[in-house]
Length: 357
Image 1: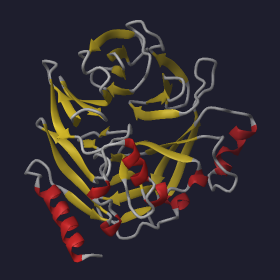
Image 2: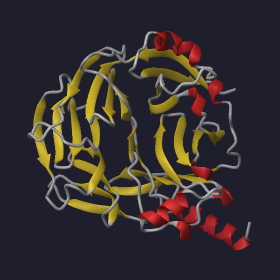
Image 3: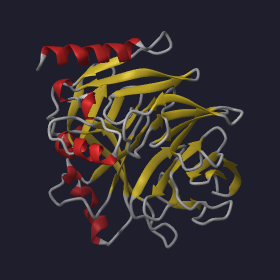
Image 4: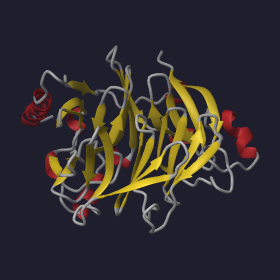
């Protein structure tokens, strides 16, 4: 590796972490080995719950799934619907309906469950629609201004009256909306961006994903972003010169065989940080970092498992298995074979723990 490039990467990592203050300690995670393969043993399946299949709850593909307060919230990518199930898999209700009325949504961009207010908020092309989380009934609509309504594709309510917003096209990739409704930029957009998950809220903190080509995960405190984790892939980190402003540039960069390109999503609990990244040859990689021991498990996702990690809390890691995609050679197939034999079509919710040896 060129000595000047080594010094440049080291300086970038030091700068990212040095921007933190006493409110937030930044952790640099140096990933030397990205060839971990034993994911089937890494995950210890505790329970598999079929999400009830009824005429009102036919799920195709989840764009987002979160588990909160004994409820499973699942937004369907194709149907543009938000379904709610119990942790036992029983279908409860659909939040809102697809349509153009004030209490409906045309395009479901994102959603957020507020446990304190017992509400579910949906972001669509007209702004925000708020619903009761106990029955899915409409409460109100919060309209963004006409110049802002099409700009944001992801959001997160962080404090009373404060909201984080993500944009792929504006001057700022990350902005905040404060109590008076005004919107302030927090992070200037760096190059062409993808519409992927941008925020994760745990019991005590908020994770904000980096822009494409960067690997610093921020947290949000006192109205500002502070670096919390920096993933260091060494000479496999994407050089900044390849981060383009246009789709054609992005497409060429994303197809490069030698570099890690971007963070797709990240989640954490008290012990673990999980990050899904796009690596060489457009391959998805899992990265698990044990915050207590510093141990790192990083390697290509095992597509044969048919498993998608969707959420985590301090007790459980949650995943979805789609019966159409799981292969017979998967070690998990024995757990789902009985559902597949009956023609069951909905995803299966998987409750897991990490089996660290």
